[in-house]
Length: 173
Image 1 (tube, rainbow, N blue to C red):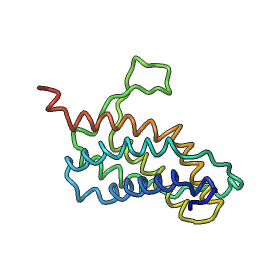
Image 2 (image 1 turned 120 degrees about the vertical axis):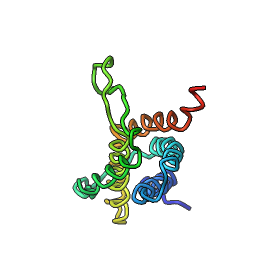
Image 3 (image 1 turned 30 degrees about the horizontal axis):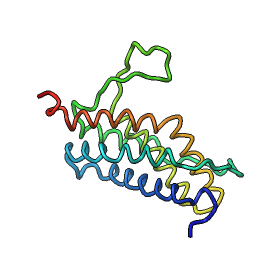
């Protein structure tokens, strides 16, 4: 039986599982072909979004316990590895819905979005692994907040790009 504590609910455990798979894949991305990468992210991005949307609202009793772990160097390693694998398919255009200027898309990068999501997922996992009630509460609360404000949107946008890359030949016929 799972605990009644929201930070250790089934939805949180499932999010941990998906987040861990996501991070492990990116940390070993040099082993995969570009086609493997596209196929993997075409599948995991909607799963991450789904699991992120089911995270419970957690009341944090000790917000000072919250911390970040991924350094700029860690982020750059993931970014550079993905950028090298994606090559010419790294750049894409998108509308920034946080900006009122919907008529002017901005150029962004698959590597940037994947590295940003990686940072949020890895920080979530490492804080949760501290294995105290306060750390778990902060990890889940922060992951949910970042889902709403940051990585949820990125997972949707990047999923569209991977769908396009996976099926572009079929769509051009």
